[in-house]
Amino acid sequence: MLLVVMAAALPLAFSTWVALLNNFVIEAAGFDGVDIGWLQSVREVPGFLAVGVIVVIMFMREQTLALISLLTLAIAVMITGFFPTVGGLLVTTMISSIGFHYYATVSQSLQLQWIDKEKAPQTLGWIVSAGSAAALVAYGLLVVSWKTFDLSYNFVYMMGGGATLVIVVICWFAYPKFESPHAQHTKMILRKQYWLYYLLQFMAGARRQIFVVFAAFMMVEKFGFEVHEVTALFLVNFAANMIFAPMMGHLIARIGERNALAFEYVGLTLVFLAYGGIFFFGWGVILAAALYVIDHLFFALAFALKTYFQKIADPKDIAPTAAVSFTINHIAAVFLPASLGYLWITSPTMVFVLAAGMAVTSLVLALMIPRHPEPGNETIFSRVQGLSPIK
Image (cartoon, rainbow, N blue to C red; front, side):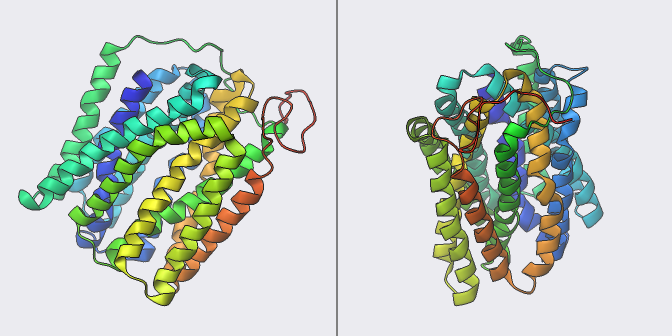
């Protein structure tokens, strides 16, 4: 239940920040594609440094770190509206990103430690659904009230961050401190038998950045979406996730991680190529909005990557590997948005063609997952071997 409540707390602040971001940076700070690329690169630096979680959990239990990270995110979002400049946004974005990425790292670790393997796909689906429901509430209120009450960016940022802050306080006092079933290693560990998981994480991070940074930015820059229209699009996304995420969890449990991820990557390849067609052929806004929703649904299958790792991992490796995998996931995220920002202003089509290529590469990697992954059977090439770390 604590995992569900924390999952619901996150989007109240973060989804508010995302919903307003593209309009806020264009209207208040005069951003272009280059500026948004740099902002998103700065936002991903804490994700690249998520390996620092390993050091922090030497002195602090993961549950405490999760709540402190959520608190950091909440406060940073609350003050974002006070700094409508490039410099101010870089600072507040960095602070909020530290909270977001450290929470995401620790919550993934806690989920894989606390949830039984047999129930993991279904339970993770319900956790995703809870987060989507909270985002749905935040976006629904924003759609209804933005125009009606002529809300300011500052007021909405304060309310979104404040709601998360209140839930963090409740979680701190309402829940006991839980013990993990397996003591976790508190040093950085790289294991050669996890190589496929590491590569899939790297590709997921690179591919996700193009969607997160440029798909929503396209809706504002090319089609002139206003705040309530962008938020309505997010609203549809999270309504769909709330309904379909538990179903996807059952689907993963039934067909396995390899087939689920392969289905996701085939779908994403087609979606990214269609995005490119919007610019190349001049296709309209209705198709763009539909692709955005479909894109988001495919990304919801990504928790199959978590359950794949849970099945092949030594239980003591979960916390340090969660930190290492977040760093790997964000290697491309640090430089890709800024570099693609320059490509965007010359050829947006090529940005999405590049994303399609990444999805195809991910598909090839996913097909290397065995039908029944387990320790000693991590990939289709595996032989039973020891769990010794790479020195």
